[in-house]
Length: 334
Ligand code: BTN
Image 1 (cartoon, rainbow, N blue to C red):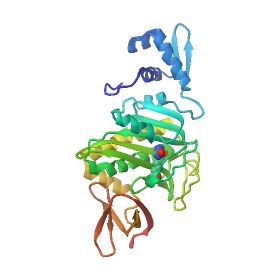
Image 2: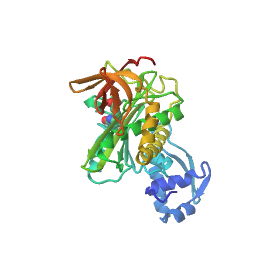
Image 3: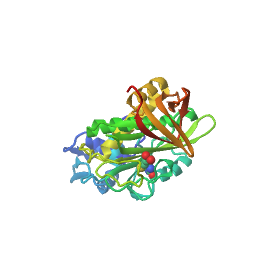
Image 4: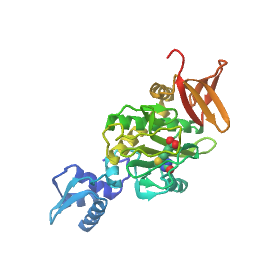
């Protein structure tokens, strides 16, 4: 266990059991490691079982970890255990149903909770998308938000969005075996259809980012019906990919996110180059809209903050930092 991570005893017990899955872990070993009583251990085991984790008790001896919850039931302790060495993902809160996973984190952020807290819900009743749109969130997807406190300049909030997109792109490619593309800033597409959307909401001060809450919605088993005629949706199941457990997808995503946020801070130029090489918007003829403003041109690259650089008709280059973009067609000569 990494000393950096402050995880609660529930996760520590689970981690110890998981070192010998299917085999007996003596109660005495747990008592010694956690420095709590046998009754305390027994209470924690009860809590883990309540989350659906399969543990059998061997009277007077100890416990055997049989496996994670069945039927895609989400256990926050199981997810935290997979993230035991990671800075992000502690603690994880789980709701069967919630309006939006962004809301509790906003309160926690205001109360000063440190970076890394996560909220996951099985469904959202008022899931929110970018530009005040609705995000359909029926059971069968991964809906979550993470509280970040990146040590970056305020103008880099957009770049945090880009890091989220790369992290989820990696996780989906590695776990589901589907080829994903990133549409600037952070839509994840498969064959031009949206499989994942992300929403980053930040609070910035004059010279620092106070916090960013990054929400992610991934269509796994179900393809939601969208109200938006301009966007076609898809899901991992529809694309014939392997549907991962939400525990694995979440933990992969958060580990990659931590990595990309580090890259962004240490080597921002390299970060932007990597993002640009994976972003299908670059090289496209695009139309960007922001309120009543419309801009049309060819997406040529990114500036140092992650804004899209658009070559306009007359040859000038404009930076587009917020709003919606539509891919019209590949640029001439591509
Ligand atoms: C978009 O593409 O418009 C962004 C969609 C973001 C959806 C996620 S689902 C979890 C989190 N909670 C929300 O209400 N929205 C984000």
